[in-house]
Length: 176
Image (cartoon, rainbow, N blue to C red):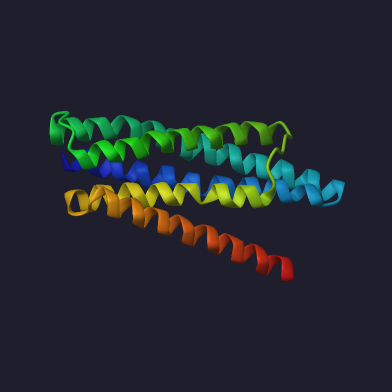
């Protein structure tokens, strides 16, 4: 059981690492469009290589292995019994995979030279993984010790804090 749980956690960490870094590469790749042509082309070429290696070498395989080891841990530890905290966590995990799919779509678009989002929009989208991480880890660690209402209030406050930080960062960038 401990080995399954350890592998599950390892692949969660590597998956999240990819989901944290991938949007940063999207941002840099988008901002490369503001450079003169020879520099822009070189940057796009380099970012495309980096994105492919990160996505296909780390992020995508880690998402699959997380999806394999998660149910194994659930089966071994709970025999597929679904405690309330775990049901809520699985809802967040479901939406995390939807977020993951959205990153995949942006990745494929950028490889084709399609830039549908501004760097500011991508900065906001970059923080979504953080929100899921906080929610999922709090549920997994605190379990029954936290009420759903207080947990959701805390999550909303955390999101408000993150969005405020993004706005402040944007204002600071605009002053420079």
